[in-house]
Image (cartoon, rainbow, N blue to C red):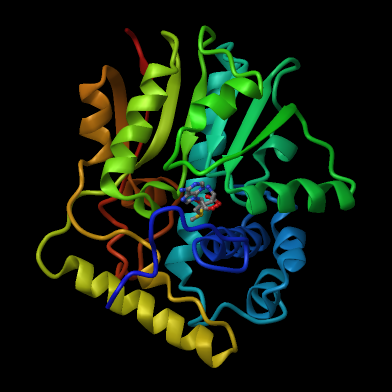
Length: 302
Ligand SMILES: C[S@@+](CC[C@H](N)C(=O)[O-])C[C@H]1O[C@@H](n2cnc3c(N)ncnc32)[C@H](O)[C@@H]1O
């Protein structure tokens, strides 16, 4: 199976990697309906609806039950993953960090729904069509950011720090960074470059949160691809073409957690299985090999 990815490829929210952001938001919409104590994302459903992929709209709105179109484990992961990053940003804000950078923000609505302290600046970075769509749609919905939101349209494989600085980012101030659901969509060397750059732009006391996937054991990736293909097949039967298995970069890469540690970050990690267990949620099936993914966060003490 060949990847559909190439250097410099771009997308909107209904094509290529953009569909992963819309699918993630659809999972948040379903998760919000199931358990508002863990996740309350009122913007997920209207954003998915505005993208206009019929299947994802029907799933996000509840018109179509998730059934085998969205595994319960994916919905539960959406709950605890959202909680993990929400808590990360709120903890950083409570510790006095007033500059946040959400890398690959997709349809994430944290800049509109978290209780950021007055004076917090939130930068959102993603592909041009992604950030423009979200800004326009949320304005049309009458949503107001709860922080000073600054948007930077970039390709995260390129020289994005220049655009971030132009938007007003101050590397002398401690920053809270997130890279949620991003790294697997970057080629291995672009992932290293991104983590290097985050570190270079981080004043002492900065914080970071991301996922660190263990390198695959023999057979792991084939099982993941088969599972993604089964989902793609069910989606195709509902009229939506999305070859998820061709969008990620598979194969060996530097694992994010040890790589960041080597750059001077002090991290704590919890597996998705541990996060689920902490909220009394089982990991029912693990065809996507999510159980071993570490959710890491920590700070730079240099
Ligand atoms: C799985 S989605 C995650 C979105 C969001 N963080 C969330 O959790 O809902 C992956 C996101 O990464 C973004 N992305 C992937 N590669 C990128 C690149 N090279 N430049 C900019 N954005 C990228 C996509 O546009 C998409 O929004």
